[in-house]
Image (cartoon, rainbow, N blue to C red; front, side, top):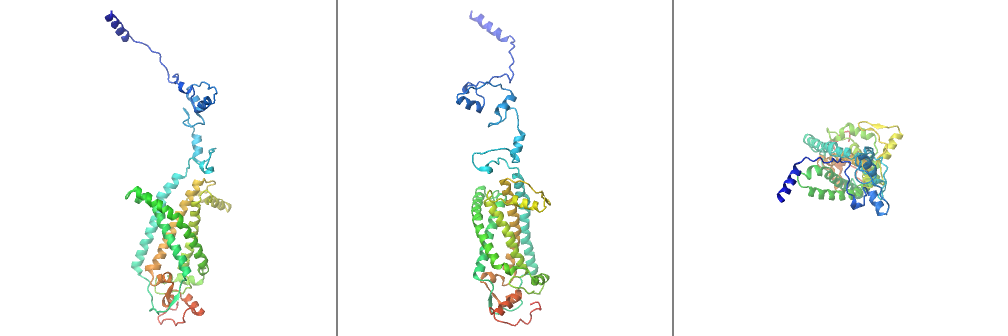
Length: 401
């Protein structure tokens, strides 16, 4: 009897059976755990004791049911929504953070990053290295500008204590700002890959604190230097003669000059104008949401008829706070590179490039022979005021002196 039963089962298993085909759309998902709820809205409705209407599982209804909720849109996509998020035109409200927090996607970020790691780092680095190389070549060919006369042993006060204090505060803060700025820009490229990412991260964190706080000393010193020296740096006719004779650096003549010669006036106004611009963009970076700078600048340019710029193209008509920061950072770095190149040349002249030049800011006292050679008109003014002893010009003095 048992043998007959096993034969019957085996025969039934070998017979072809046609099972009904069930499509994916007709598959019913077991939703007993949620009481039949399919979406977050359904779950919340059931928690409130409301009746949940049955839903079908097709793609169209999935897109309709999930629209406006967390997650995907089921079988549909919403390129318009993502496009609006990308360009900042989506109608979004946030519970905290204000307008800034509503920027979920910022389209200009990649363009800024590519500029920062590309042209900015490349050409900025070339500018600094090229300036140093040219100065080295010039030093080899020209050598140090030496005194043509023997020192008299008598000195005159070139810069008072307050003047020197403001100068060194400005110089020291700018050097710190330049170094920390360069570490911030180039650290990811040259420090992290070859030393370590942890060391680079620590270095950048320290650079950030130094940069953000030393900036205030730079601004204070910049203002002090402007107030003390602006009247001495107004261009005049003697500057034309100074430039015509290349300042005595090229050739053997030493043109007359007052307290500041033509070259020093260029340095002064470069520091004031470029340093002022760097300061404004830096403050904007410290307070990006309170002190936006570029949109106001673009509006001002359009008000005078400037609608576009060469290379850049049409001026933007609206900027998100994040874009303001990107513009400010790019401008901050570009102007800083230019000013750093100028200051490198200034440091060269004030140190190894000219004999006796460092004494002016070191001790504040310069020999009369140095004053006669480089600032003869200024020395004459001091002699008339009785602040320097009258002295005949050296026998080998040039007519320009």
